[in-house]
Amino acid sequence: MLKGIRIINHRSNHSLKLLFSKHVTTICGESFQGKSNVLRALKWIALNKPAGISFISWGHKESSVLLATDKHRVRRTRSKSKNTYELDKQELHAFGNSVPDSVQNALRLSDLNFQTQQEIPHGSGPLFWFALSSGEVSRRLNAVVNLDLIDRIQTNAQKKLRTAQTLEREYERIVEEERNQSEQLAYAKQMFHDWQSIHQLHTDIQRITQQRNELRKLFTDAQNQKQKAAKLNKILSALQKDFAQFETLRQTIIETENDRDSLRIMIQRTQRMQTMMCELNEQKETTEQRYKQKMKGRCPLCNRKT
Image (cartoon, rainbow, N blue to C red; front, side, top):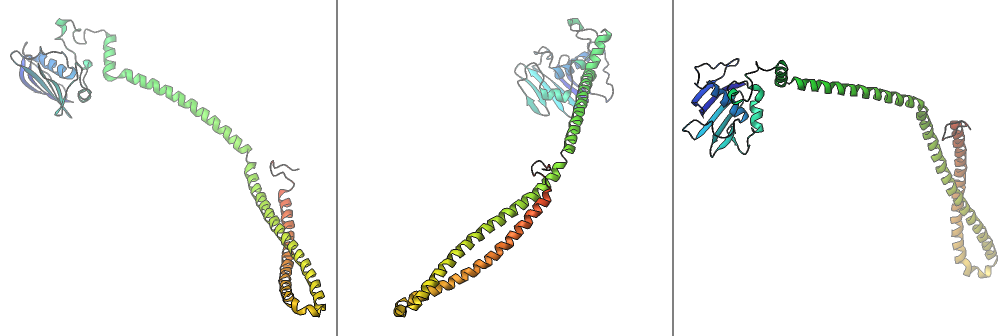
């Protein structure tokens, strides 16, 4: 909201200060006393019109107008060597014939905010808005209150609403299709649990088979050692019959007896391993039976009965 204006050396107003009312401000006075020049000064600072320095009061070198709003203070100064705007004590330069964006945002005034009669002799427009056609007045009022912007926003909003409704229906259709596909694949979850059980059984069978192969290898080694021990026993029996060579073969016999003891221990271990292998074979058979019972004649890949 505009609060007041201070005019220095602008046309016929050499030094004038006015405070604006919150509602309506009326400037009264005789002709050629500067009433219209107050509006010209207000238009000059808001629109930077007219250009040049012809509006500077006769006999003075500089003109300035200070306009105060409820939030900002804007000063416009012009002379032959100086051309500046000042917004809240910050000087603005190099703006040409336009108004700096920061000043426009602070004042929020445009041509639509001014109805004047003083420019009529120069042929720049009709007398106020009273002389305009109803259509032109309507167009200008729409521009003042942004009715055309409201219509565009409403039209765009309706388009976006229709687009959103179309997308919503499409998303609902996609969700329904996904729900149907999910229901059709409900058996896959149970099938996955069954596969996990089967996979665990298969892993157990592989582990037991590996242990069985290791025990079979140990058992084979034990059998070979047993055969070697039998041969050594025969050799030892033959050596015992030859007492003449007892002293030379005594050490060999002692070593042979030690080997025999080692073989005996190995045979005992082999026997225990053989017993363990039997138990593992029984466990394997039990596991295979459980596997067959679990599958119930179904294919682990397609879940169909074979």
